[in-house]
Length: 151
Image (cartoon, rainbow, N blue to C red):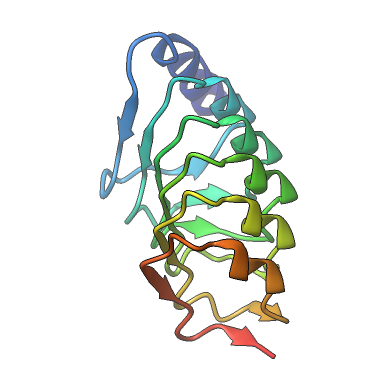
């Protein structure tokens, strides 16, 4: 509880200070708190290579509408992506490699029309049909779904 509270207070004070939160390979542990959605000015969120950090993907990430880069590769998340991810229409890079995403890819990902990079590889429990809405991502330059179980 103390760590959760401390991280929540950090995010609250951070929200007025910066446009980047760069914590890759930092030994971060715990879960992504819902207060992440309060970082409206955030343009870059990189917390990759923190295997003891994760939890579920909070629907509040959909409030990060100015986010350009979202990289949580090689983290310890579990569960499906929330449909609110479709609200992140400014996001250019969505990097979820080996992040623990499970279930089906939400069709709302097709609303992320600024995406140039989508990395889903090594999420072996990501399954179901590939949403036809991915065809709306006309700016995509890199798409990697290696190791996923789409049917």
